Length: 337
Length: 234
View 1 (spheres, rainbow over the protein chains, first blue to last red):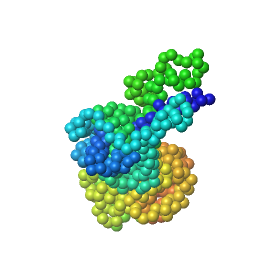
View 2: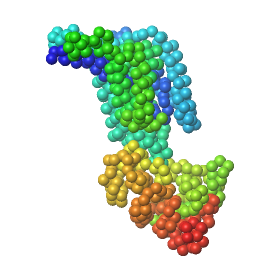
View 3: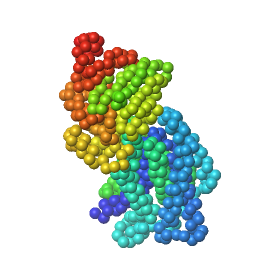
């Protein structure tokens, strides 16, 4: 019996808790991408760098607060910095919209052209961010590090396996729940949110109904700014901030949005968790887990790992290919690409 | 004075002229039907009347005012409503949300208008929580007409409202359209089912190559042997 509990604790510690946190970050990122796709109809490859920009502003604000001694111990100062980074990211997006995206919107260019434009914006932002903050890794998770420590947990329960929950993981999940709830409430219950969905559904009919496209686009960028800076800051808080990582992060985020059904907010959130959990389940070494569950003589000698962790990114793409082959509109029926 | 009139309209796409001086008019509470062979410019005439296609010549007057320079949204504000032939609902939104979006420009309470519309289309009341894209073709057309009615328009323009629905549903839709006209709304519609449409029409316009070929009351067009032979299949 105790073996079973140990096995489950092992899974919880190495798969469930980390994947919930990572999945939340992907979900917020994918929600941003899906909203740009639904309303502005293009795949925004700059989204990773927008998240990076938000994180960078968070770090600057945290440094400022730390230097003048403001903190909210035991919580990380990042929470205090979030409103500022959200504001800065929204301003950045509105400037980008006015100077770059609006022109192509008015020209009604092909989605492919628009995508390439977003790649250009991505490279510009990547350079801009490295210019301001450098390329080295920055950790900014101050405050209490753990809610539950592995050693404490072992002492408390007397199990052989420990379970640790980091503060940043808990904060990530809580903030994600709050933000996603807000976004869904906004989209489904408010007049403005409904007009965004109407615009996404049928642009011409939305115009005939007197919905102002300008307003819809601005509100979309504002929501995307909130989502991107929160997702980026939470990811950086959890794993440390390194500009290069955010370039890679855009890949699993896109996979999440497409697996869930691009353009569909519920799909984006579900897709985030699906990608995170599949990555963890497939790259986990099951040796210890099986040792607990199987009779002694059957205990495996190898690591029992399906794929090594280096192939983490490959998993999102394999999932992406399978979903596109079997159900091209995604699990939650988004738009066809 | 005619309530709504497009006079001597010339319009087209690029160098190709589709409308060559056609005129369409309708009076309050009356039904005007535009019929004609494929490619005669029926839908183009509708788009031109609603401002979705600029006129190169001609005039459009609404309640005596010249509205030729107004954009479609501005015409909606004036009291015009348009139901496109295809993609005329918000498919992922519920029937009720479709109605709310139809009345987006109104700042006052929509509930009494929604109640009136549910009286007119009782089936929509039972389906109000369902996504419009999941409804049958006939029900979807009802949603489309209902959405346009949300602004309480004085003139309703319908582009082939019965395209792709069964004859029974078609009769029902025509009945509803008559009901709407009785409330004092002017109706302009393009119809593929010319015979049935002319039966309910107060006036009919037969377009050929963007010009008015025949203009008369619905019943006299039906009685006109030349029209019958050429356009109504005998």
